Length: 255
Image (cartoon, rainbow, N blue to C red; front, side, top):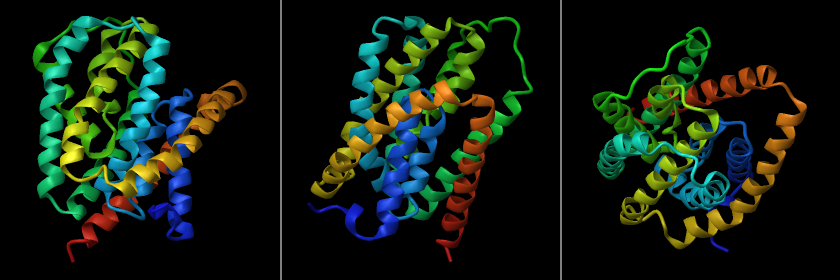
């Protein structure tokens, strides 16, 4: 099979690690998935990394939709999906016309901003639900669609808008599942236009998918055995370090 994953041990290790964090994230350790593109970007282009991961994410979306079918807030979706489409289109333009170094910088900023938001959000508590706002929903959905397209990391900006709404946990989860399933479907056409669904990428995705599924089960086991208060600081520290690495590579890519 023609795949970069067999090109050298570093590529194999990066692919394995990326699938591990995707699987752990889908298993319940949400937030870890943001590390997947930065990890793969250590050995290949960030755009190619995102292209390889998209089919794997779509398979996971199908499983999640089955689990959470009907558990979503329609008003949130109606307010946010138009902005998400705009964000995907902006991401398409960025990936098509901006160099890999710029995309690496974007991925690095996303990773670091995500960690900083997580750190400071632990110090912020909202006691009353915030009402819906079309301007706020449109803005954060656009950012979410853009970051989702560039590095499959649309969760943080999406949460900036939705978490203060104080919806029931099941509705929050189900709404997010459907939102990102639709966003991932929207990304299919531009990713195809960018040539990211060639034989090598699809073969690599097929080879890596079982690893992600295995680690989905591992993620569920970790939740049962380890305190999130202990595990999350380690994961976010790793994300921060990977983000710094992407910034470093992106910056020196201009020299």
